[in-house]
Each structure stands twice: as C-alpha cells, then as structure tokens.
Image 1 (cartoon, protein in one colour):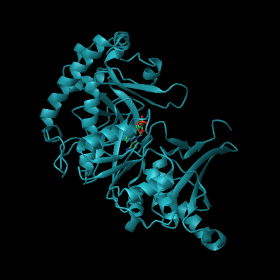
Image 2 (spheres, rainbow, N blue to C red; image 1 turned 90 degrees about the vertical axis):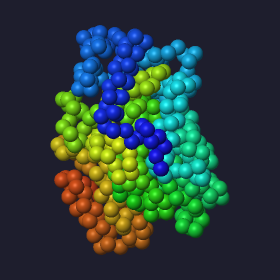
Image 3 (tube, rainbow, N blue to C red; image 1 turned 90 degrees about the horizontal axis):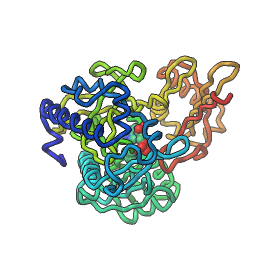
Image 4 (cartoon, rainbow, N blue to C red; image 1 turned 120 degrees about the vertical axis):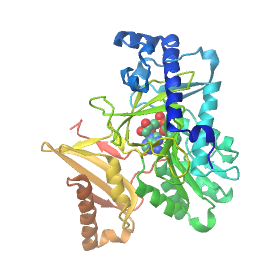
Length: 434
Ligand code: DLL
C-alpha cells in the first residue's frame, strides 16, 4: 500500500520541478520572516533571487546545529508564537536543548509524513501499535503516535522504560506492531525471555518500526529473529521535523525520503561540495513546506548514500541507505576511520556472542587502543579457557577484516553490559582526557 499515491510515485522530472518551486518559495519566506536568515545571507552575499535552478542550490549557505543553538529558543521562528501548536526539543550534548516548533500546518505535514512511513512499513488500520519511545519533548513518540493514528491503528502509548511492563503489555494487549529504538527492541526481547515468555507463542507482533538511532542490517536480522516480526528502519531528526523524514518499505532497499517536503543533498563534509552520484556523503536537508521553523540546507552530519532509481514497491521517491555513521561519530584510531556501525555488523554476525557491545577507546604510550566488550551468549563459556580464547580470536579476526586494525576483545557475562531504553550510547572515547 502507498499512502499518498500522487506524491510518492511522481515522475522524477515533476518532482524536481515541484522541489524547485518550493525551494525558491521557502528561501524568500525565510529571508522575509526570519531576521537570523536575512542577516546570515546578507553577510554571505547571498540573495534568494540567485536560485533559478536546482543546481543553484549549492550557492545557499548551510544551516548547522550551532545556528539553532545561537538562536535559542525562538530566534529561527518565522511566525509569532501565537501561531504555534507544538514545541519539542532535543537534548543537546552540552547545555541548552535544541527547540523545534510547529504551526497547525506543520503538525499536519508531520502527521502525514509519519503516516506515509507507517504505511510503507506495512502498518494498517487493523494494527495495535505499542509506542515504546519516551513520550515528552522527544519527537519520536508523539510523531509516530500521530502517524500511526492517522493510518487508523490503535495506539498503546507505553512510553519507554519499565521493560517488564512493556513485555506484559505486548502479550496481554496483543500488540501487532512495536515502535522503538532498535536497541530497546532487543532489550525488551531479552527481558521477556528472562521473565519466561515464549515470544513466538505469547506475543502477536508482526511488524517493528525502528528508528532514532543507527542499526545495521545484521541487527535487524537479530531483532526479527528474537521478536519474530518484520523489521523496518525509519529516519528523521528534530531540527527537520522529527520522525517522518524517511522510512523503509517492505522491499527494504533503502528509506524513502518524503522529498516533496524534504529536499536532500549529499555533500563531502570537508570540501562541502556535492558528492558524485552514487557516492557516500553527509546528508543535507531543506524543509520545503514547514512554516514555523524552516531549516535551509541543514547539515545533519549523518552519512549515507542516495538512490534515485524507482523502487520495486512502486514509489519513485529517492531512497537513502542506512545511516553508515555520523561525521562526528567517526573514530579515528591509529589513523584509520572507524564507524561504530562497522563494529556492530561484525558482532551481530557471530552467534556465540550476544547483541550488546561497548566500544572503549583510550591512549596508551601515545598509541590509540580500541577495546570492544561483548557478552558471550552462554555464560558457561567463560569457564572454558580454550573455547573462550577461540571465540575471542574469532571476534578479533572478524573485526580486523572489516576495520583493518587490531582491537582488544573482552568477552563478558551475559546481561552485564549497560542497556538503553532510548537511544543507545555505546562509545566511550577517553583519549581527550588522557
Ligand atoms: O531521533 C527523530 C526520530 C524519532 C527518528 C523516531 C526516527 C524515529 P533526534 O533525537 O533529533 O530525532 O535525533 C536525530 O538521530 O541525526 C541521526 O543521527 C539519528 N537517527 C535518527 N533516525 C535514525 C535511523 C530523532 N533510522 C538523529 N538510523 C539523526 C540512524 C538515526 N540514525
């Protein structure tokens, strides 16, 4: 099923014409209504009238997270606060959160975009959806809640946390779909098993809509196996709208971007120039239709690829690959670029170890040291020295093949590493302090 046939199956040429018209309009709109943008553009010698073709977009100055921070809380608003209907915020790494605002029309666009993502994943009005994202300022829970509601599904607003109760609700209320971070889905499965549930018999889940953090294909396979459901990945970010930017269809060959609302570009993070077609780059997004707080050429820092070929599902919207990492997540270890997602892929592929891991980077004698901690699947292994060494060497070898560097592997007891109810944070880089 396709939620919005007209906009999701448009011919490329028609889509580009639509995007150009909307892009020009939003540029004039922010120039007129947001002094922050006007000042920035004036200083850069840029004027919206300089954009005549999609190719001219590269002349438009970028927007970054620091702009939102500098303009905290309402400096990027294009409308008076009396026109706002919702305010969300994402927690920043330092100090103040990033505030994002919605008018009534923005709420409608957001809901429609999340509904498209839900339908692409296979959600229908017959479904019962447990939303296990934290409700609150975070955009994930309310955004997906609204989208699934629009599709006509029944919503269980479970929020995150109290994992034993999550498992009980899944069983008792016979939820057919789960919305959460991928790491939390795995944790729910783990607790359910610990409580003695037989997931195949006791749960009725068919579909997982997972997003808000990076997850490898291998991790999805693991979740599908553990929760006995079909997994899908969906992507978004608060600054742009929240969830609803893109989502996988049942073909699982990339996440369809709602590109009549969000104009995507890929740039080289160093040169800031567009990458060549088919190459990996940093995703830059422009909101084409938002009224309260449009963002223009927003640098997401998320690294992916774009595929403009039409999908077997019938949609023609451009597909973004899974997020391969964030440009600011990339670890440089002994000069080699390492993305945590590469480590995750290796770990998920080895059945004798669990799916939880931690990455610790330190510096010893001026040398970077990478340690990967993983849980063994079966605790008895920890007392069998030979088997333990064999497994440790296997993990080390597989990591070396992918990363091209040696990692120290520490195998630990099942259930001993930290679990996350929201976005997982598995990397500790202690080099800055040492
Ligand atoms: O995480 C919005 C969202 C909620 C998307 C629920 C999907 C589902 P923020 O908290 O602002 O917003 O975090 C945005 O999370 O820049 C990515 O780095 C990361 N991210 C979001 N979805 C994915 C995904 C929400 N599917 C940041 N894969 C983004 C990888 C993702 N990373």
